[in-house]
Length: 487
Image: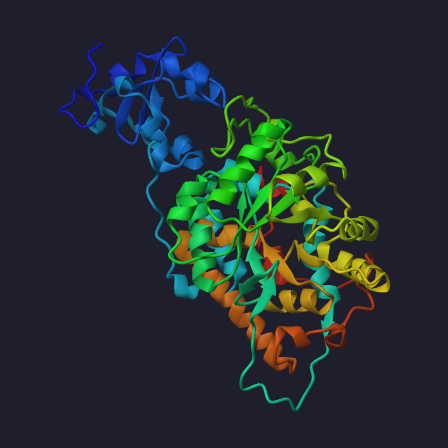
């Protein structure tokens, strides 16, 4: 086979010629209109050989873009380049393997809330990626409870307060924020939009809130750093690798881009049973993980399991303190006893979270946990920053969480809906809407600063009464698609 260096005049490869090289022993793959012989690379691929070999003799562009940064193609040896794909020879039945044509989107100004962005994103996303995002544990009761719980907390507005000027700014983990929210970590951002984590980072910086970089992202740390225009607040969410040297390497790379806090995920020693995702046989490997990973064919989540240490204990927190000066935060605290232990251990913060309902069904919501945790910390005079996540969709949701004692809230799926709908522009637009809603809630409750928000502004008599009927969130119900209707 005659090969041509990239950038030089190259041969044209017809689809019929490409399709002849369709085995692991003779593997040609088209990526962005260029054909590569990746036969020798299969054994080196961090995600395993199968994930590439299934595209042998065909076009793997969509699957490639969903996981990898644009710079990843540069890691292929020039000798692997065969030539340019002759698109005129592509059969109609293979058209879907190329980059899909963009749907005609409604004007972004027509999206007035999180549910509007979700409606658009659901139309744009591939089924497998949508299933991964929306999958939750078992019967998905906790997933729905995360949103429903906010309907059991009511507001107690104060009147005759001069609210011409209100201040939504605050500090979280020592960092200034334009309002008490941060973009939380969600793995593999490019599954939902080519902008990936870079889009989330840009949107968070423009609005002025922190962004928690997922350790299992699809943009590299350097790519995320490169899109910063100022000095934005970046945190790192970390699944602790069983190989401590690999965990340390990730910490060092995060420190190198100015990351200020380490959010150690502690609610996922093993991954929950997420049935929507398990029905899809998907093989992936996140780009920020080093080689040696084993790909899985049991859905996205199972493909990530090998990166997580199930032996992590409280004793390991001393090691983290010894290797980094970043603030140490435990992400996934779910009862007051562990919150107290974290404070007594001198950790900097905790995130009350059930992992978006994706781990243990019937685990309680972050909002309910606030009502349990904060009194126990106060009675012991313990000081630790408390964040929460799960189900936040409105500015009033943020206000309720702050009133119950949170220093800030994480935005996970809701930020991804914004990303998946309009990319970077969608993230910025959604965060601005949420900030405006929060400011409006402050004004209507007669509160002039975030520091003034307290329990006197909420009524939560039935917060922990799980059987109590609450007004239905019709917008949320309208977007929720149960498995049966998706068959």
